[in-house]
Image 1: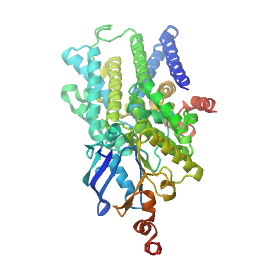
Image 2: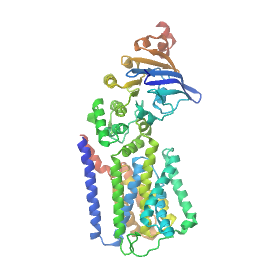
Image 3: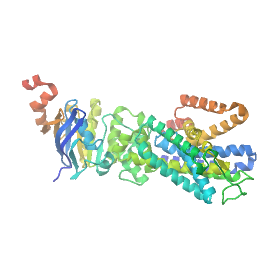
Image 4: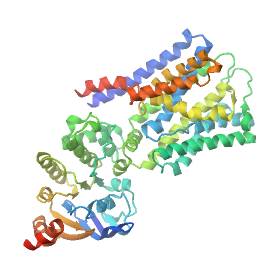
Length: 327
Length: 243
């Protein structure tokens, strides 16, 4: 039975490698900039959702405030770049580290809260972060920051002529987030997180330091989300508080994982692959007058999925597999 | 030789309610000790104090000659205290083997070794055939067994069993008794809370009877069951007189 387990893990890795390779070749066929844009966003949200899933899916601490870490990644990168000339690559890492530290600082009081109270705290904190940035003159306040574009450069990670570099970065980020999850899944941390989610008291009795597990999950999760935020800022070349720290980002990170299967390896990728193109398409077809219609479609889909498949879309695959394995 | 476990003058108050008053017990290495008493005697509270779920209001708890009163549950587990829960607390979304791996990770940092250890324990507890089933799909008796398996995977010196034999059919209970003996034969000390006297008395080396939060009687099972104080606590005054 250990062979089964190892085989399953290896199979996941092979599937991921094949998918990543296919995605890498996609731009050879897909030349349309609009479609490329959708692909970039899909990969970005898959990465974000995968990162969110570490804290909220595996460790069970539902956060609806991850927009904060997304915004911190974006702002750290752009502030360092525009004020001090620090290259975005370093800014990106700095943003990740700062987000991880803030996540742990916030976790210190909030991981004592349980269930709904924790969720509410995350929403409130992210809103406070948004307000702070809206009023912080030095950081551009509500006006935001425009990133000076001086031609295509990998060094400065900015490209005007083609979207492809952004596409490849998003692909790498998505692969990284997936791989980190894959790797952590079969580690002490992965087991600790799932134990904490299912039953903290029993976990504690088995030597799991519940508080530290949550802190670890929060740090990894926030770090990766901030990298995504830094990327998004470079991609847009302009940031303001609402466009990188708004509540919608918190939702957009949670929804793909919930739709695809919360706390599963493939859930976020699967969810993002369906949700993001659908949102973008409804948004562009219905147009400006139909603002919010995409969200209605979203909501309806989530309701339908949670009624029919409470374990998410991945359960369509695993259900048959589980039968084959046990019987 | 110092006893493996000792509670010294332990008190636990919940508001105005005194759940444990001045409880001093000790458990020697290699013993099977039964902690019995009627409902509300304070057995589960004492149990939780020993496992480190909450600190005692007063008094101290010693394990392996060290004062562990201030240590949280996770650290006591690392020192060698394993426990089960009266109301089973399986990790429901995880498979049986994964449940046990969580316990095995206390002493095995390499996943491969933790997994091997977990399989060993499943073999030992007779759950090997159910390794890849979700914990939520187990029948109640198997869930009890899983509680024991998980605790054993932490390689405890002292195993605290909280009513693992209660609510089982006679056959299941007999298998349970056999398992507890087998555990003791591997050198693990067992302290078990049980409600049903008939099952535990033949199994334990020594019984400690709690009543109204205090130690009422302590001794060999055969003596304890005949003690008028115990009969009175369980059945009331009338029966104590006739005995």
